[in-house]
Amino acid sequence: MNQDPFKEYLKESEPNKQEIRYAWSTAIGLQAVDGIKPSQYLIDTAVRNIEGSITLQQAQDLIDSYYKERPLSSLLNI
Image: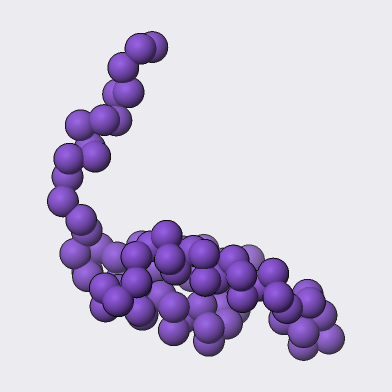
């Protein structure tokens, strides 16, 4: 396969707030299925992304660094 079959989708415009909100809600809902409650930090970061003040990549980087800096026991309230 020499051509990227998904290349044409890169030309699409950025998702709107409703689509971004739906994606975040879906991701958080999938975690809830496993009994995982998102941190307030994750929720606040998601809101910043939905509002457009940060990109999805920036949100991912912030969330990754947030959880890397905290021991698992503090996140689980152990």
